[in-house]
Amino acid sequence: MATAWVIAEQRDGALAPVTAELVTVARDVADEVRVVVAGDGAGAASSLAAYGVSEIIDLGPLDSVLPGPVLGASVARLVGEEPSVVIGAQTYTGRDALGRASALLGAPVLTNAVAVRREGDQVLTEHQIFGGTMVATAAAELRGHVLVGVRPKSVAAVAAAAPTAPSVRVVEPALDVPGVVVTVVDRQREEREGPSLDEAAIVVSGGRGLGKPEAYQMIEELAALLGGAPGASRAIVDAGWVPYAYQVGQTGTTVKPDLYIAVGISGATQHLVGMKGAKHIVAINKDKDAPIFQVADLGIVADASSLLPRVIEAVRARQAAS
Ligand SMILES: Cc1cc2nc3c(=O)[nH]c(=O)nc-3n(C[C@H](O)[C@H](O)[C@H](O)COP(=O)(O)OP(=O)(O)OC[C@H]3O[C@@H](n4cnc5c(N)ncnc54)[C@H](O)[C@@H]3O)c2cc1C
Image (cartoon, rainbow, N blue to C red; front, side, top):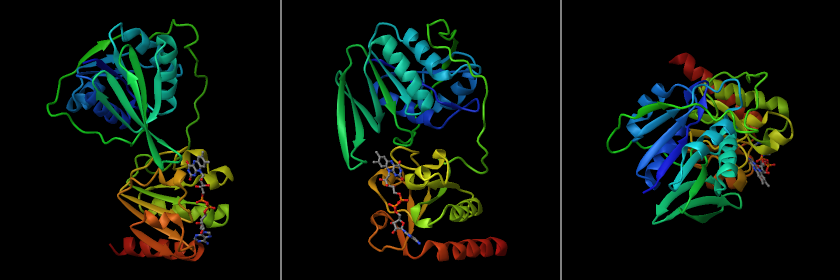
């Protein structure tokens, strides 16, 4: 069996949860999993031991450069001649890394996969198409290297049958490859309180049915009261009501919270594909035939502008009483 190389995804210097998802996928396609991380190799070794990783390759912190291209060039240098599967997340950094590695290795990259498996010498990947209404399966021959971008939250992170004690190897990053160094001159941190959209246990999302941008404040208020994150449909992102970072769906973030509350969202397939994995879905829409009700566990036919203030009041009252 070939080796799988996982490009770790990091956030604020720590491993992002998607890394364990990628390692879970990697175990299914290879019998040895190595993880390439930019700094904190020891931390990665301890948090990934439960997932059956054999080695952590630590490139050291890549704080002053855009990490993706350097990660990609470093992986291209590490993989060697033997066929291997390189797995990254379908994120800004993961896409940069896979694209760079693909170009340097002359190897195919299968993007936006929601499932990956191995059949003999083939790596099979599944991709949602037509707004998630169909799944296409692609097959790549594992004669050389096969690169795969996996969509976050499409695979559950599962611990290995037996934990490992991964060794940590410190390797110089490939900063000398022409064109990979993009220097970071400034960082802007988006103001946010509460959990991030992709990790929140509760997501409250608003759509065009809110009627006007100011009404989105109610979405933020309810999300904050419930300890969740606010989200949005693309319609109100495109309209400029909220930033793109709030968008849930095919071209936004995929969420899998315990509870997803959709307010004034019709339930277009491109939205559903990003949230239908939620454990419980509550939908508020004034149209009883809105497609969102087909995936909702609890559907409320109501005008959002009059119902939302009452919901917020009720949650406040309940919290005050407890
Ligand atoms: C390639 C592509 C990618 C896309 N990616 C995404 C994506 O990632 N995420 C995404 O969300 N969309 C995406 N879209 C857009 C998607 O097709 C829909 O256009 C979008 O999701 C609609 O947003 P909406 O439900 O807020 O608006 P609408 O479709 O306009 O629906 C508004 C809903 O609000 C209800 N409503 C109206 N007034 C009230 C009221 N007073 N109270 C309660 N309910 C009310 C209406 O009954 C309606 O159901 C994509 C489209 C394409 C082509």
